[in-house]
Amino acid sequence: MNPHNQLPILHEYLLHMGDTLQEVSPAALRERGKWSQKLFDLVLDRIEQLTPGFQSSLVIYLAGDTTRDTDIVAALLAVDRLSAAYTYWTRLFPPRQPDESMFVLSLLHDLSDRVEHAIQLLDSMF
Image 1 (tube, rainbow, N blue to C red):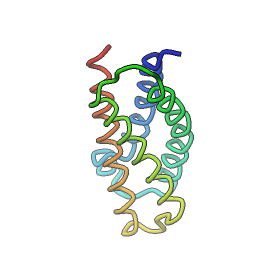
Image 2 (tube, helix red, strand yellow):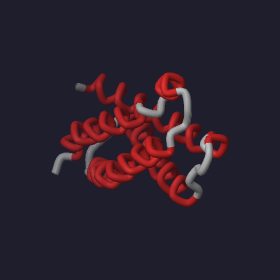
Image 3 (tube, rainbow, N blue to C red):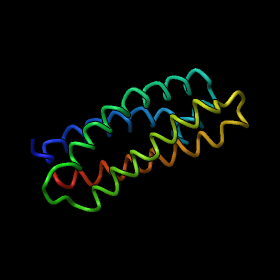
C-alpha cells in the first residue's frame, strides 16, 4: 500500500477535527458568551471518535518505505500528540465549572492551531 494514498484520508480526518474544534474557538465562545458543559462533552466525544482512525492512517503513512515531507510528518505528529493528550487529560480531569475549563480550552486551541497548520500543508500538496 502506498503511504501517500493515506494523505487524502488524513486530510479528511483533519477537516472533521477542524470543524469540531471551531465550535469551541475563541470567537464561537465569545458569541456563545459562556462555557457549556454539553458542548465540551460533544467536542470531546467527536475528537475521541476521530482520533483512532486518524492514528491508524498516520501509522500506515509513516510505515511505508518511501520519502515523506518532514514538515508534513511533524505537523501530523503534532496533531496526534495533542489529540491524544486532550482526550486523556479531559477524561481524567473534566472541567466542572468555567474556571476549571481554561486548561481544556488551552489544549483545544493548541490542537486547533496544529490541525489548521496540517490542513494548510496538505492543501498545498493537492
